Image (cartoon, rainbow, N blue to C red; front, top):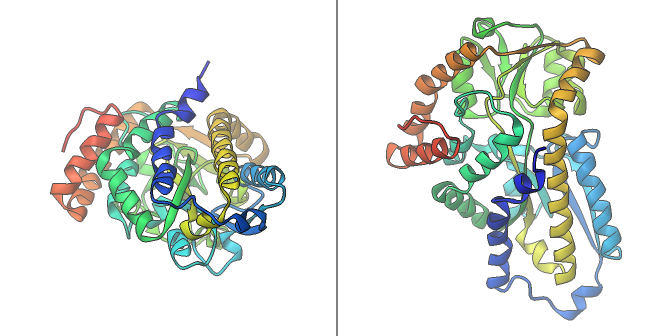
Length: 360
């Protein structure tokens, strides 16, 4: 049986503690006595709408925060698609005082912060990995010194506190027709959201299209897109399965989302409410990851049964061929983009964490 407790808590717990502990060390947990009687109404900007399983889990724990805090802290989950803002602006919302709490899907911002692409370069694992194996490996990759320092610097500049993290299900290609191998990608218009994903899509003979998640459904409907790179939960949670027909499964990366809080707003909370907030957010992300690990295969079966999907699992030799494309066309381009003196140590640290033998 999978030891989910170990997967979810370690080694990220130590990393998470640094972020919160740093606030205490710099005096951010000191409050006037009058603040303890105040009521705080927050917005949490979410990449997915409330119908998505992840958002439902978070919303459940937000309600528990309100209950446990005696109505001192109320958090409303707001979908980015229902606001003027975009997911790629998440960290800026914290800096500019436009929200109290947000999800930051880091892959949306790697054009701005290319060093953060290192743990999410395509096809770094030597073979398709199960999510339960990917989670601890990716945690190690995100905690490598250079990546962790870059991330913390960004958060500091944007006056944001990192409460926790979760991963989306493995990223795969979801298409309007079934393919049985790499050659099937040629000529397809595929939505990608990261610079490196765009490089990879081009290298396999497809046309990358960049657009925000709320625009994808209509684009698929009118034929402006033939497919998307996303997690399986997008098929049901944001209903893209209604306008797609197939999945090509390689599990080529996990994408991280960070839960951020405005440092300014966090500073206003009484210590007991801070504690409740942290505890419930950690419970929520643990539950999300447990759901992700347990649900992936079940969801594939649901898509076949209820949506008529064709699910094709890449043959080992096809995974190897696609990995070679990434190794030759994407990884070196990223290294050159960020600079070899920085990029090579970063990608080598990540490859080590993933147990891959290559070094650049």
